[in-house]
Length: 359
Ligand SMILES: *Cc1c(COP(=O)(O)O)cnc(C)c1O
Image (cartoon, rainbow, N blue to C red; front, top):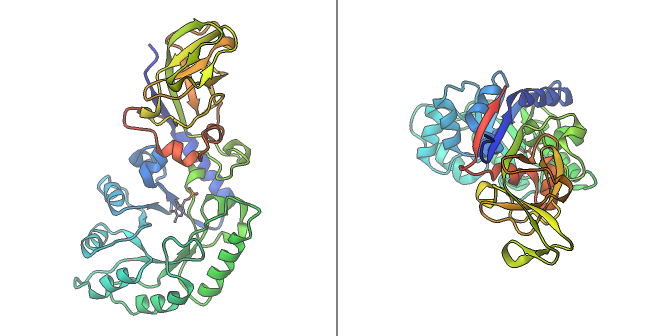
């Protein structure tokens, strides 16, 4: 029997994609970004397959602690850092590196009483206006950190791009110039590039690169897909057909009847919906694969089901496998039909979907 909605995670593809990162950035150390449950692929299994990588980055302290408790021993950086002394305690206790992006964090470090030290990445806000010190505050933050007994020396330096997925934008060059200008006299290691930087902005490849989405085989750019960049998709999302029937011309399908048949149509019902993380915004026409062949979804996506037009695949029957994205159907393409980015689709797969891995 075909299993219900499930995701297959291809661990060999992760290794392939890591090797692609090394080809793009042969001299750099790699900080593999596995925040948000490794972009929906399973935090621990992805961490284990990346064994041997120079470092790992997650967003939050609790993600990093889970990794340490699972015996992941490489450098782990917490990208959002800490907000209070208790979190700093945890960072010290579990030997985690952290990003320092605010004055409040430096105050906490300076007042910390225990005789321990933490490795820090001082973050410059080079234009994104999210986390980091602005250029006016950056030098004094650096001075305070080099004088802080709780901070291991030398201090590492980083920034993050806001628009590197847009190859035409001039923002990335501006961010790059600002970072280089403010950090060139500092000896610590530097890190700038996310996946888009690694692939499209070779000047941004410095001591460390921080690939995320490309490790999962997905392009950071809206105009191409991972396969074009020599990457292999890691996640395939599957479900099964549970009903096949004929409807007459003029019949409205699904909630609000947004799709109306023009002629007799063979309609299939697939047991996956937004309750599984399939995007409700996917428009009529979004492709899925039924037994490996493309057919369009029709009508609204509901919580547990989507409807498809099987007229071109009239031999399909309940129990047949449907692929929503992955091998043979890039998640990038589905994201375009749903007016979103592939990141949200991968991260959005819910608990109900069983994740199995193949090596
Ligand atoms: C998420 C994140 C990355 C990875 O970005 P991708 O676009 O997935 O490669 C790198 N650096 C920081 C600071 C991030 O938050």
